[in-house]
Length: 214
Length: 312
Image: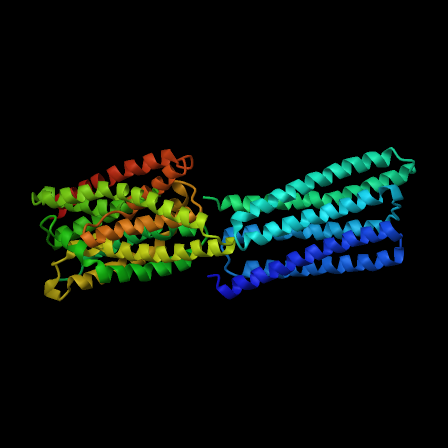
């Protein structure tokens, strides 16, 4: 039997996990903005450390939760759903880390004419993740409302796709050198993959709700 | 006088426990909401409780169905137990009540002592059981649907309510199984052992123990068959099905007519199936079960009549 204290513990840990993922994506967005504005590689290293630390913390919470979900007598349907959501949400933190790290390891050079679009893309991706995390939170308060938040995830993901398309077109029609164009495109695709993945997690949320539909 | 004829009751009780405890916890076990071991333990305790507290009314009904002596009750019990065992081997959720009534009727026909009025009442109740449970199932499903769609709650709370609910109604179902169906096990012995000081209450307790024996030793196969055989059930549907079955069987336990938990459960699942569009119902399986319902009393009737001709 799942007692109130166990349920509370699971919900609290899930809440901390969501906050950590949100903080990780926020720090990635801030790192991209800072890099666009200052090109300060030392500061970038510090920011990436923060992103990595948060990603590591999200991993730790996920592992603890997985053990808890298996050891507590959670209803099997809930256990499968929560484990699926945990794993897929954790991948967003992984992508945030790899995106920020790419700026450093690949020495990405972002020409000034793309700064605003890239910063906007990072912002939209973050908002997309936040909407997805909100939909997850709704699952534990009033799961019928979770689908509304997933709808916002879909809208934001579409906006991110549009920015990505325009940006890549701009990159390849610019005077930037060939290999730099390819690197920049890869970077843009990584940023967009965060909103893509948030949408995938949102679809999972939708299924969790649909399974409990009457 | 010896207690040897009670061995027929042990056999019948074992068969009934193996068969009917599936109706109580089968959906929960098949949905992996509760482990088989926990389910059988809970079921056994509640069956004994139901048999002792409310099982006597049905026992009187069987006592009055045909004239019996210690030989005929043994023959009837063994015949009914054989019929049920045969159906268990075929994994068909048939009725222990039908089997026992068929066997008593077989003895009654052979000895020309059938109480036709009592038998007619029982036949009417057999028809009323799945229909009543179907209707109750539809009402319960609608009510629970309303509750779960109107009341704001998280998925953990929802699942916890359904999960806890399944265990609670499983216990209630086991209680009603004991209360209603103990008559199938030792009801036929009512009044046969007064010389040994065995009252109906003692027989109810023994019947409950015999049913528990079947539950604990041989109910797994049927639990899986009931849980997945008629329609793929989610946890909420399982909750509705067992609740409806338990309510129906409890009503008949109060009336004093032993009916079939299998009939009640299949009726309830069909009710849910109709409300949800019926696409999940396995019609071929329902047809097979329905035929088994017709075949069971005939089989036990033939077996007990033959047994009467040979041994009595």
